Image (cartoon, rainbow, N blue to C red):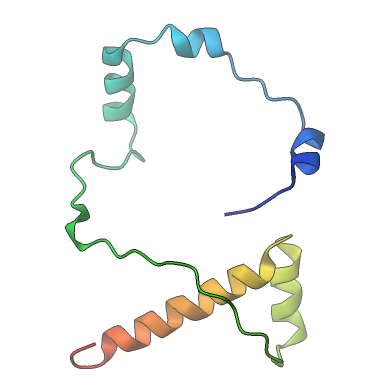
Length: 102
């Protein structure tokens, strides 16, 4: 997920979506396109085990990071610290899931 300001959004190249073609699609056209798309998610998703995470205030800290690792994340653009936090969070969840009763 990337957050950008409205000013940055306005500087993006013009969008080339043909909305008239989109509006002309029938429900059957859309259903056919979805069934033919190998990347489409199944429509019968079981949300009963979904986890909801509410953002909590972050805690500022000093952390020593290898220069190449920091450069990699910084090169991904604005929000790199949030992405680094996401990677660390995924690691924590993985470790906790490995523990008995975790």
